[in-house]
Amino acid sequence: MTHEAVQPTVDPARAQAFVGTMTNIMNGGALALMCSIGHKTGLFDTMATLPPSTSVEIAAAAGLQERYVREWLAAMTVGGVVDHDEATATFHLPREHAGLLTRAAGPLNLTTFCQYVGLLGQVEDEVVEAFRNGGGVPYDRYPSFQALMAESSGQRFERTLVRQIVPILGPVGEALATGIDVADVGCGSGRAMVILGEAFPASRFVGIDMSETGIERARGLAAERGVANVRFEVHDAAALHHDADFDLVTTFDAIHDQAHPDTVLRAIFEAVRPGGTYLCVEPSASSHLHENLDLPMAPLLYTVSTMHCMTVSLAYGGEGLGAAWGSQETVRRLERAGFVDVRIERVRDDRSNTYFVARRPD
Image 1 (cartoon, one colour):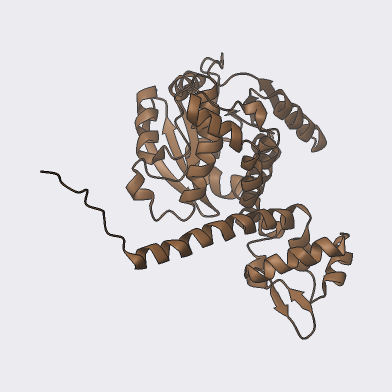
Image 2: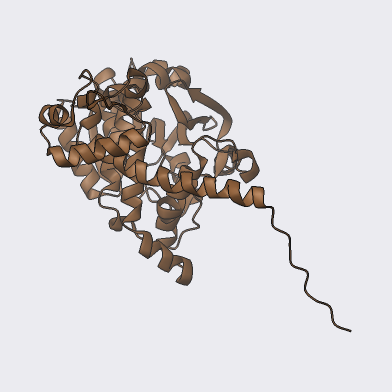
């Protein structure tokens, strides 16, 4: 006796709804590229200063080629980003939109994140190859990544570091004014240490990063701004060679893409003086996937993780922790490294990150 395979039924309404979902995904990806162009060319910044204007007027004000600007404006119009008046052939960027699209918006400027789409697209074929054969894509295949991180973190640091982040540190934050030793591990282009060095001249700051290019930029920034109480070192975060040298150590979005994050956390523990503080800043997420379903930028977070954070770690034989390792896992690993009294804090103008303040026991 034979049994015919039972074909699953298809819900036409669900299929039709998914057509809409995929259409939104494709349109969103395309518009992200166009928003990235609007950011890089300064078009959003220019339009924020203009009344309703024609493509010729906008191109002239931005110093750009009109034909390209006209096509870009068409994409922005059908995407609902700019307003268009067909009677006068003018385009206008509403103030409500400008507050999320221009450099004046600081860390609220969402076009900064739009740049990841084009950047990650450059390594898509290499990531696909890693899917098939294992391994990962090494850090040097992302030549623009550190500059993008410097831009996005710089906007955040200028607005939040001194006024919003330092206060959550407690006593060690207050001690910055009288003079303590501070290190930032994975400092990138050094913006955080330079800002703190300017604000707290009695303290001493060290930025540490494995990227010679990043450290070169950091030293240039410190020299440009005349900050003498900051220095920078080229070191692998897993081999700091600092023994209880610092009252405060910070990491900003630096742990999750390490090859061996537990080794790095233990090295940081050893670098903090007994009774000292470690500030670990990581992307806001739960360690449980189902709890991230309503996270506003969860698809972007997991995409960046797959195509950068995770694959870079795997490229160096690491565990590939991923950007969405989450608060629960962060606390667990901090405590496993030896830290105690771990507090979870939020910063008003930084919605994408969670701040973990931990202490090395006396």
